[in-house]
Each structure stands twice: as structure tokens, then as C-alpha cells.
Length: 262
Image (cartoon, rainbow, N blue to C red; front, side, top):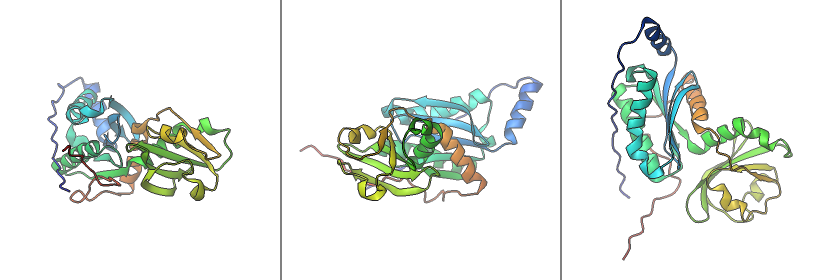
């Protein structure tokens, strides 16, 4: 299978010089850990600017087919709006997958291109781990009635009855490693021993219709992925846990097949 990867470049239009107060605010921003976070793995893409793990601003695109054409313009607009230059970024973080094949390539190529041009670290994080962190911190209260301990199961649609999924405990420790899974009514039964399971993501409704798992809660609400990506990226930056810029690639979990009509 041939793999193609392009390097993305963003042309930044600098804002005009402002007042003394505005310039002081920009200097204050520059002294903090500033990370650009990119997520194009699923149907909703986002780019966000974070400072010390907190989101400053975020832009979102709901048109999955337009992620490639949207992302560079969005990054430029995001930085311009905040009065931040590329040179003020300390790192770029990206969801590495699993997810949409095209979306993963778009996000990874953009992140690597920026890191190479700016000579800053690349941070890659598994999409399912980011989703689980978001659910634990934002949706956990919805499962207060469930018997503990709780397990969190993000599911990304992988066509037909297949999903990309994993299971994490409340401390974000991996219980079931990320994998592509064909769902059936007895999925997860042997591994989790009837522990309470919180399922979410755009693939979870597939299992909701057939599941016979005894202690499961399906949540349709989508947690804020950008907020969790910023938190996890900041933690990895502090521990200097960076990806190898030359060898970093998307996490596909399964081969990409293209049907050729005869």
C-alpha cells in the first residue's frame, strides 16, 4: 500500500501593532507554554491554542470532507485573532488516530510540517485516549447512578458493525488496548467481568442496538475533545515526551482498502 504525505505550510498575516497594553498582553502569553492542538481524526475537526494546558481559543469544522481545505485557514485565523505568532508556539500536538484515514493524514502532515519549519517538538496522542479523558472529566457525573468501578469506552465508527475502540478506567489507565472491533451482543463481556461501562462516540449507537452487556450506559453527548487534548499535551510537554518528527505517523489500526469497481 502506497502512503502519501504532504507537508503543510501556514502563511501568517501579522496583526498591526497595538497599544502598550496589548503588547504587554502578548509578552505575557509568550512566557507561558503555548501549544497548537490539532484534531482531524473524526467527523468534527478542531484547532485550538492552549496556554499551560488551558484552551485560549478554538475553531471547529463539522464538515468532515472539508478538513483538508479548512485546517490551514483555521490555524492562520486562530493565531491572528489571538495576536500570536508562529514563533511563540512551543509545540504542536495532534491526535494520531485511530479515525478517518484522510483526516489522520491531514492532521499529521500539518503538524509535522509546522514542527519542522519552526523547529519545535511534535506531540502525538491516541484519539481514543483523548476521548476517554474528555468523558472522564466532563461526562462522569452522568454515570453517578452506575455501580462502580466505572470504565469508559470511546467508539469511533469504522464502517458496518466495526468500530475503533478501547476501554479505560477512571484514572485513564488502559484496560483494553485500542483496536478495531466487530461488535456483537456479547462484546466486552469476558474482558470486563460486568463492570460498569460508559460508551460514547459516533460508533456507540451500533452496539446500543444489539448489546446484552448488563451494566452499560450510552451517552449521546459529545465531550469537548479540544479541552482534553490541550490538557494531555501540556502534561506530555512538561515531561518532554515528544514524538520522533521523522518517524511519527498516523495510528490506523487496520489496513485501508479501496474498492475498485469493475
